[in-house]
Amino acid sequence: VIFVRRASEPDLEQCVGVLACLADYFTPDTHDEVRKAFLQHPAWVATLDEEVIGFLLVERRYSSTAEITFAAVLPDRQRAGVGTALVDTALGSLAHEGVAVVEVKTLDASSGYEPYVATRAFWERRGFHQIDCVDPLPGWQPGNPSAIYVAALTATR
Ligand SMILES: CC(C)(COP(=O)(O)OP(=O)(O)OC[C@H]1O[C@@H](n2cnc3c(N)ncnc32)[C@H](O)[C@@H]1OP(=O)(O)O)[C@@H](O)C(=O)NCCC(=O)NCCS
Image (cartoon, rainbow, N blue to C red; front, side, top):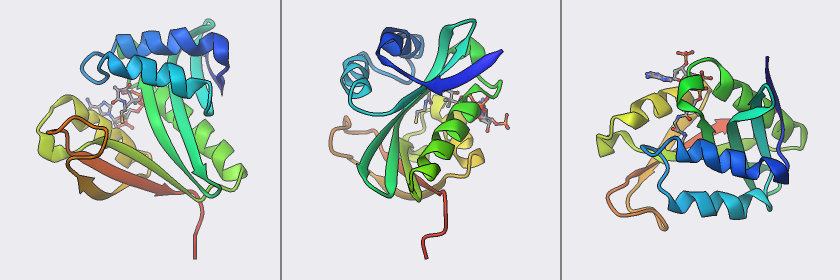
């Protein structure tokens, strides 16, 4: 049975282990980024037999908005609803805390990079809408056009 729960510090290295299995998506420098962010920001993990098979990390910079900064599921556990369960649980909890709009940044279609076709399909199926493409995005390597997606958790007007 797959469980989704709030993450805590002992889960960190297993989450980094998930990124390490996804080299087409996460360069090695992201491992330390996650190590740093994990201790400061809310995260959720999906577990199977107490092993972490996926996680999601969120950054709260303003009271009514949030950004999903990382989402990852082990390759052999993808397409089984784990990512959806992580997103549903995290967004449910954020909505409860008064978050109205959630952002996620991913690689834009204009990159022509095939692995992210499924990623954009995932966010779109989860109710995210693309509002912009920024290239170069500060902090991202040039040549990686960033697709900016948002989802509303509640009406804002
Ligand atoms: C994106 C990711 C977190 C989704 O987790 P997941 O457990 O695979 O997702 P789910 O099983 O809940 O949902 C699968 C959905 O993704 C989309 N999807 C996944 N693979 C796809 C593919 N090869 N082609 C088209 N759509 C695909 C579909 O919309 C699918 O929904 P459907 O089955 O209802 O049609 C996971 O696939 C992953 O870790 N990918 C690599 C890393 C990554 O891209 N992270 C996000 C960076 S912004």
